[in-house]
Image (cartoon, helix red, strand yellow):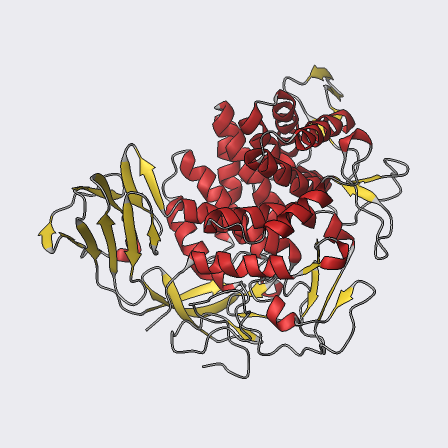
Length: 561
């Protein structure tokens, strides 16, 4: 027997991590840096804790709480909100506080890509929050005031007026004392795309409030990256940071959909398709494109998040083929990238916390975190960002998007897109994958309901209503039935373990599939081996006392099957 995909469990786990990997001494300030390989293990503060993390962890925590329908974690959420509302400076930019571990106090435009989504989330949840509205509006207008507006192309053949807005930030860092200092830079490079990750949040702001300045800034940034920056080639291939590029693509597709501009949708889709060509069918996404040899790449969970969000945007534009990616990615590499076993972590609770470092119960507190760099078959604990604060904030956003898409209402018909267990006002859904090829819908009221049909289901599909076989016609990839209250609709199909060869990270793996779930992979990895989905393997260790768990574990080297 194998453990089933359980998104609720993943949400509970990450909620546990965010609630516990914070510093009470500093009003629940997050710890970005976690070092589980040290003896003893530790978590340490760094500048980014009060920069991007107070934004991304707010959005991630709020998403997990919404998904679970709980107020557990609200104390930390309000702390993060208080942090967000501090440290604002000229041009509406958010800076960081001057902590003992902080060096130069500055604002990074890349980091505003994490701050603005959190402000949008507050707008969603607290629409009457005047301070939040003030900060959001001033941030957008401040950034708009800082861009270079490229209006004319002066070429050897003459001067040509630009027909569309083209906005470029002069630098990627803005000092709190001194503004733009062109002798300084973040050192990340790729300023055009790193500065453009705010695109999705700008478009979301326009969607939420009709803010025309946000739309103008979004269009100008999009046009610069797609044009004069020369970041992408004509096929929308690129050299660099996958997280930033696909995050930009998410905003591009959303922008095109909202303003009915097919160019943006086409370009965003091409970016997604390029990254998909570098990725595995089970959702392993390289952190960089053409930067290192592929066999040196690792998978940042942020990148899987971006692909899931972008797939969602493309689906909304009518590209139904991306349902398969969303389903396979979220239930395989995404959940495997979450920490579920910590028996290998050495703790010393006698060491006092201090100097921005905590040692207490790291093994318990780190359960539910997400890695910033997995191989297809393992998480290497010795790698920097083996557990990454950035991924902890972004992952719950993708998890909620997938959860919201488990069952969708399309023209009055309820369609199961992602097989798992979920209950709504209208239906109760139960999936027995990967143990059986069986997906059950129980109607709680009269409705039209059915399934999205995937190639991995095979061709021998059987449908029954209350035990009686019925015929179903597949139309536009779905099959639907009229159900009365208490009717039980069951889809069954043959399921067996199928071994498939696949190249991922420049290495050939044998991937063992049962339906849409990977249940094993060879060669097997270390230090923390992934895809151990046998339900008899011992569960979470050590068990945090305030969370009830029911799923599989990523086992350490001492207790591998």
